[in-house]
Length: 589
Image 1 (cartoon, rainbow, N blue to C red):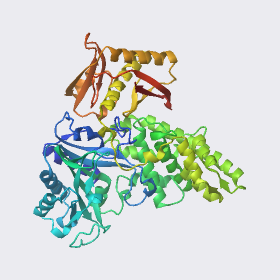
Image 2: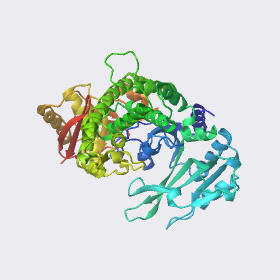
Image 3: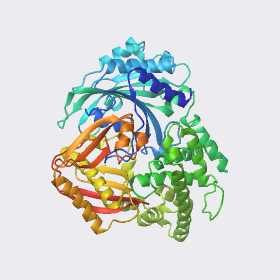
Image 4: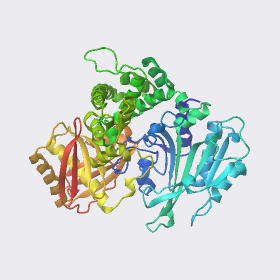
């Protein structure tokens, strides 16, 4: 069964079960300061899992774009990917274990036609004050799963959450498929031939600050099934890279290289694919945060290509496509019809890949010259390694490879200290665990969220309507706002923005929230930049003067916001984020 068919079957199946199909959210988490990318299907839905009402109701289903870099060194084996698609369905205080398990079983056996003898499951064995999940055990048994195929496992395997130190959490049940020949009668979770393909999480507890687990009033179901893995399993492939989601990309890579190396080819295919999806969010390669993850992926792919004999050199004039651009064409062919935002951003994506390849080739030449000079020393200091990274954009992995080729040692501890001193956060961007900042719905955080809308409107007043939001990051201590603008703001412009925001705060805020069809909202709202990501029904937040009723800000947003006194708004820093993008940091005093 092909991946496109699995996607379609999944959405239609849960539509018939009363679920509303929602589009994939952005790879950039909205107002979440703890992770750089959307790492799981439930990530964008945390506010609704915490009790906020969703415009489309209590039953939802979608295919979510996800990106994880915690296992980047494992990419190229049978299962690890940087970018992946997660099939998910949710119950927001509606159905619970019985329907979730029965529908999972029905989809696997009826829609995907997986034989019963190929399936096994695990359930929570109980721990501390949380009891053994006898209900899930009974449900699976009644569906025909043998007791020998049901394993009771602890929190390490069959428990999700909370997202932070406190919040919603609960046991889960996982489904496994046997990829060998004839399956054994009993399920052994340590047998690698039993591959996990689906996970149903039952959020029925709230972990308190005291570490206690209290039953939730709103019980939720969150499920997740990786499209790449289930496609490989159903096609009888040993690796996700042997499916149609990767083979055309790898085939294109092989046309452009002179040496064969299976793992290197897979790394190139994976990293170029992930880079294209990040670039579609209008993220630029850089040396910090998301930009660094992107630069690292592109340059790691280029380095592998270089080792395999690909032509990666700066060219003044040529009609020949660059290596990364050429590989990218096959990615557009696979995903363009599923994610039209890729095709809409194709020129931008190709342009950035082109420029990054030129910069990389120059950086490698400079690095080679530096290594020639250092050859006699036999050692690269931490500062020298860091300078290659900071000044020339050479990832430490490539520096290590070059040093190995030259027989030079690297002071890796010194490099690490220099990196920390410079406050780079590449290590945090690689975290594969999900921790949502949206779980912090404190009064202060909500105030900063509201202030972000005021700042956005003020910037458009002062700098012009061409200003567009490119990202935001909100904590309980400050806000950070990225927006499209070509130059540094003048002192008088910053002062004017601050005055506009503070004038709005002083006169008091009135906030109205409305639910309406997406098309109606787009016709009424001036500020809406991620149109393709909105569901059919959206929330529109309007901020206006309580006395004059004059509208100041009107945006599509999931909330929450507050009309309480925000305090005094102050911009503490402005800086360049990337080409054509500025960043403002501000506080409420």
